[in-house]
Image (cartoon, rainbow, N blue to C red):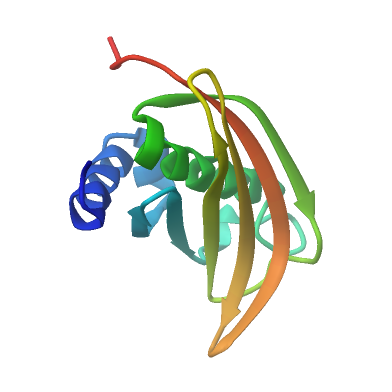
Length: 140
C-alpha cells in the first residue's frame, strides 16, 4: 500500500498529465487514503456572464476531485456518472473541492465532494456533488 506522501505525488503527476487541468490551473492540495483536495485560484476567464465561477468549472472541479479520491484506492478510473448541486453563487479569491470515497468496489467507486469559495479567511460552501467512477487499466 502506498503512503499518503507517495499517493499525493502520484496524483500531482496525474493532474499534470491532463491538459485541461493544466489549462485551468487545478492544484492538488492533498490526496491519499480515499480522499483528495483540489484548489483553483479565481480567474475572470473562468467566470460566467455575471462574474461568478462558471458551473462548468464547478462540475469540473467536483468531477476531478472525486476522480482523484477514487484513484487513491483504485488506480486509474473513468467517470460513469457525475451529479452536481449548485447551492450558492461561486464568488471568491479561490475555490477548494474536497472529495472522499464513500464506497469502493471492484467495478464501481462511489464518491462525494463539496466545493467551497474562499475569500480571505472565510470559507463558504457553494456546491456539492457525487461521482460514480469505474476502475480501468492503464491508458493506451
